[in-house]
Image 1 (tube, one colour):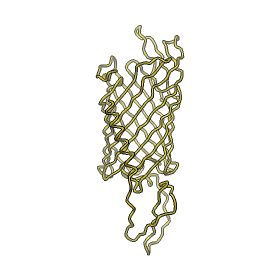
Image 2 (image 1 turned 90 degrees about the vertical axis):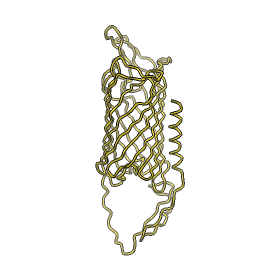
Image 3 (image 1 turned 45 degrees about the vertical axis):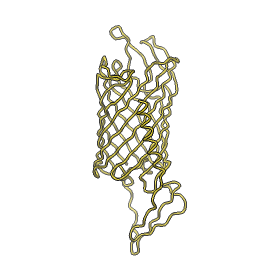
Image 4 (image 1 turned 180 degrees about the vertical axis):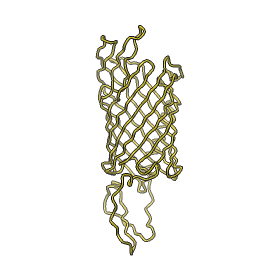
Length: 346
């Protein structure tokens, strides 16, 4: 597992460093001359923006009002990391899986005493403040059963901001950094109830007891009909108090969630103007949680492959269909979530 994490890190580092390579100077088209503007531009801070003069005899026309998707490239491989300025993008995703298999604490496959099934719905929205800055937020909803624990509840609400650090002159390479902050709107408690004279979890745990911070890095490199995207995020979770115990005997105890790490590499092939094929290598891990200073020995890991397709229904809508294939794991369900998503811009 450590070799796999190390390999993911090298791939992401390569994507990030490649973004700092030199770019060829833009060439003038027939009937046009290109002169550098003075100073930096809003589109690419710190870089010169070419000013295009019309050919002789051409008549100037009044610019038309931009439509919602007008600033967004039609092909997925050409789309930037950040939403264009003064534009919104709403992302709605839903996934479901049901399984009796899981990974134990040693990474071996095991049969669960009861099924683990989960429906997850995610709603997020982003807004382009500037060409180099984006803000947004998201919230998840969970409904299902984790072996003995079952129920439904929302997760923690997250707000984020992301800033472009670099963009090449022909916009085929980018590097961005951001911070996501989650707030305790989900259920952090781990109460229990009696079932057949045995204690069982009472409801799903869908959040943390305090505010969490997630700094992250993103990168993109497009070439020909292909694109590579990298993402890595570290999660620092503040401790808090949660309810534990059986029914009326429950009490509040100090709970310290373990740190989290997530990383992914996306490979995208643009088959035509309306269809892109996707392949994602995804890694998630969380260190062991602690209750009143004592480890719960519940560290989790998952390495999965997520193939899929994206149908570009127009300049404003994209439909995504994916399936997650677990490769390696630890204390994690071995399910095969089917994922559907819709992205809309306005």
